[in-house]
Structure formats: structure tokens, C-alpha cells
Length: 423
Image (tube, rainbow, N blue to C red):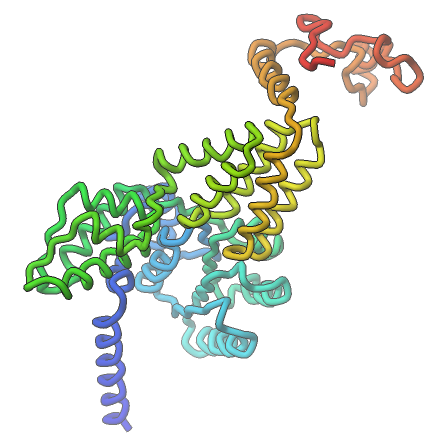
């Protein structure tokens, strides 16, 4: 029996090593300690609460919220290595109720017979419906499991409020280009064994800039570039921008989703809509979508255009833009491209009014200069006798009983008779 167990352990270890050796670069480069973890200093810095909790092995139930490739799963795996708890990884996409019940049963046995805690890591927890999320609640409350959930979606909308209230939310930001350069340099040093790879700093920065803050995208592109160069080389590998472009599959639409090109193109879309050129607006929309821009980002910008540029000339434009956002949220890409196209054309063809936009700009300027102006006594709330004695609310005229345009002053004295709107 012992020999069989020993042989099983040897085979399991051999399988694990073999899988790791042939796994994608992004998986091989996952750090297994906090010292090698790059980025997220606001969450995992030396004086931060989460780092202290990990080092003390006092992990609360928590949610990691951040964009793809920001380090959510990697951080969870580091916790797995540093904690004395048993770490169980669970996919909200591929795992169901039967597997979950088995995890809970094993966690209960572990606590009862071995006095060991269980950390349950659920990737893409937002994919679970309300009933599935509710199923977690009693076990989190009892402390039978410590939950770590990872999500790319806003937990306020995608995680039940009851479960959310029992978890700490840690926001992981998109990695900076500097962070990605550090990750890529580490991969070049230790990720390819004996293979010698030459890449200059400018090309490395180019790869980092086009990876949209996503470490997985950057590492996958680097690995593909190296393999492509290997096939054409005589043993000496040198990477240039052309290979990087091909590896990112963006040779026809170079579009840095965070850099100047991003802001130039969204500006072109906005100004085309404002100018009523629906065809040009569609073109700039296509430039962003085909380059992989987040459709919800574009939908949010369309909502802004609906009120900033269309405004009171067509109040229904805001309904159209909000419906566009919800439609994109429901079905995602590629199907939501037509929803965005319809909204873009609607806004471009709509009559335009910037009255509210300009009026509120003037309001903001006045507010900055009059923040300490007192509210007129007759407009103040008077819930207590003391306030009434101080003349709060005195002589207020209930406007439905009067000609509301003339009966009383609503501005502070300093702004009396001020007009922001044209009519």
C-alpha cells in the first residue's frame, strides 16, 4: 500500500512537472510569492491590510475586481502557497452544484478531522446566478470556507448584496506599461530556458504599450513571437516590431487603447456625431471595435454624447443611449456591434442642442465661487421648533398656489436674478 502511494506521488509529481514544462508562458511565469508579484501596490504593498493578512495567514472572504490580466488569479495562487489552509480552485463557468457540494463536504470533514481551513477560489464569480451565489452564504457566514472570488465585472451589479456585504472588495487596476515591461523582462530571462532572445528596449515598450495593461496578452504575444522567429532562424532569435505586430494580430489596426491614438479616435467619433456625419461616425466606431475596444466603454461615451450634444433637442436620445449600454452588457461582442452602430447613427442624425451642457458649465463656475453663500431663510428646512423660532421656512410660498415665476427668490442673494438657460 505504501509503495503504491509512493509510486502514485512520483507519477503525480512527474505529471505536474511535465504539464508545467509544456504550459503556456503566461502560466509558467506566474510568480509564487509576493516579492515577484508585479503591480497593484495600492492593494498588496508592504503596509497594506491585504498583505499583512496574507503574511499572518488571517485571510478574510474577499473579491478581487479588475480587468483581464491584472493579476487576480495569480494573487489567489500566491495566497494558496502562503496560507496553511487547503486551497480549492473552482470555475464558475465549468463547475456546477454537484462539484460545489463535494467541496463543501470535504471542507467540513477537513475542519472536523484535521482542524484545517479551506479557501475556495471561484474564478469569474459573476457568472454564477443569484441562487448559486446564495448557496455560498451559509458556509461563508459559518466560516466553513473562506471565499476568494475573482471578477472582471462591477461586484455592485454582479454579486448579490448579501454575499457582497460579507466580503472585502479589493480593486486591481490595469497594469501600467512599466509593470508589463518588468514582467516581460523576467520572462525573457527565465521563461525560455537556453534560448537566447534579442529584443531592444523600444520594441519591448512597443509590445507593452499594445497589450492594454493585460499581462497575459503581453506574455502570449511574446511567446508566439519567439516561436515564429524560431521557425525562421538559424538558432539566433531577434524580435522586432513587425514580429510583435503579427503576434498581437493587430497589424491592420494599430490602436493603443490607452495612448494618444485611443483619445484621438474617440475624439473623432464624438466630433463626427456632433457634426452630424453618421458615415464618419460609423467608421471611427469600427476602428475601435475591430481593434478590440471594450464595447461598454464606447456605450458610456455615447451616453455622454446623448446629453452633451443632443440634449433637449431630442430628450429621447438618452433613452436610446442607455438602452444601447444595456444591450451591449447583455450580449457582448461580436453581436453588440450593431447595437452600437444603431445608437451612433441615431445620435449623429438627431437634432443638436448644447444648451444644458453650456448652462451647467456656467453653474459649476458660479458654484466654485459661491460655495459659502447661505440658503435664503424662507427656503430652509424647519423640522424643529428651534429652527422655526430662527425663522427657518418663514414666509415660504407654496408655488402651486401662486404664479410660480414671480412669487419668491430661489437663488442666494449674491446670484439673485441669475440666468443660465436661454429661455
